[in-house]
Each structure stands twice: as C-alpha cells, then as structure tokens.
Length: 68
Image (cartoon, rainbow, N blue to C red; front, side, top):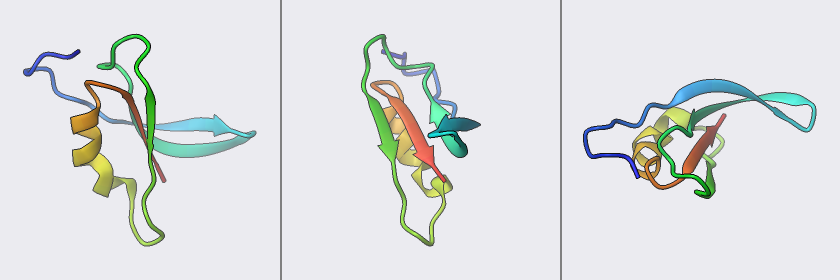
C-alpha cells in the first residue's frame, strides 16, 4: 500500500479494447501486486474528470480506470 505522502497520479492513456482505442485516466502504480481492477463509469453528460477524486482515493488499494 502507498504511503500517506505518496500522491495518486492519474495518467491519460489510450488502451486497446476489442481492437479499438479507448481513452481512460489510469492509476496503476500505487496498487499492490494482485490488487483488483476497478473501472469507473460515468453518465452520458459527464467526463472522467468527475471521477478523479474517487480514483485518487481508490488508487492505493486497486488499479483504477476512469474511462471516457
């Protein structure tokens, strides 16, 4: 688990999904080995930017993907 002083950093990445490129904000560096993946899904009129505070809180315990 990450230390209290280590901040979660979400990186914008294009990830391959079924042969297509999908943009997601990803934080996978803080999670311990074997940590679960968590995909945050927003509504039709929102952006993954709205998920950043939640993603930062989850990042020390899991790999977080906030898709757009």
